[in-house]
Length: 235
Image (cartoon, rainbow, N blue to C red; front, side):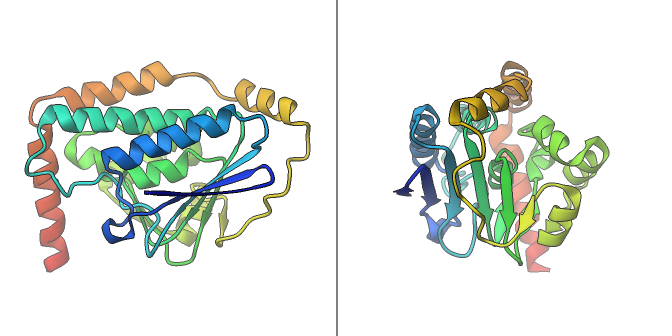
C-alpha cells in the first residue's frame, strides 16, 4: 500500500491505493505510521516526501466498509490518523507533500501538516469533518491559514483549488517538483530548530478529536453526510 523509494537523505512514500483514491484505511495508516516513525528517527534522512499514486493525492477516510463499521471502529481509525498527523506536524526533519486531484478530508489534513506543501494545477481541497461532527486537524489548519479563513472553510464546507490554496497559505507552492537538496544548516541544528518552533499541543488535539468522535452515532452521522454528498453530485 506504500511505495517507498530512498535517495541520499530523501525518503519518498507514495500512497498506493489509486483504485480507492488513496483513501486512508486502517492498514494504510499503520503502514504510514511505521514508515514515518522510522524516517524521523533516522539520522541519515533529512527529508520525507509524501505523494499519492494515480489521479488523487488522498480522498480522506476510507469509507468502503462504512455499512459494517461501528462507532468504536471509526473512533479508533480517527485516533490513529490523528497520531499520524501529530507525528508529521512535530517531525524534526523536513516534510514535503505533493498533492494532485482530490485532497479531501484526512487527506487534506495530511497535506496541511507538512512543512512544504505543493499543489499541482487541478488539485482541490476540502475539510468536511465538521459536517459530521469531527474535530480533526482544526488547530493546525488555523495555524496555516488563520482563524477566520479556517472557520469559514470548516463550517461552510467550502472547496479550494490550487491557486486559492496557495493564496490562503495552505499550499506553499504550485507544481509537483521541488528542490530536495540537503538542508542549508547542519542536520542536528535543523532538528533542534523544528522542535523549538512547534508548541506541543498533542494531548489537546487528541482530546478535541476524541470528544467530538465519542458522541454516540458517529457511524450514522458519517453515513448521512455521505448520502447528502452523493445526492448533491447526482443533481
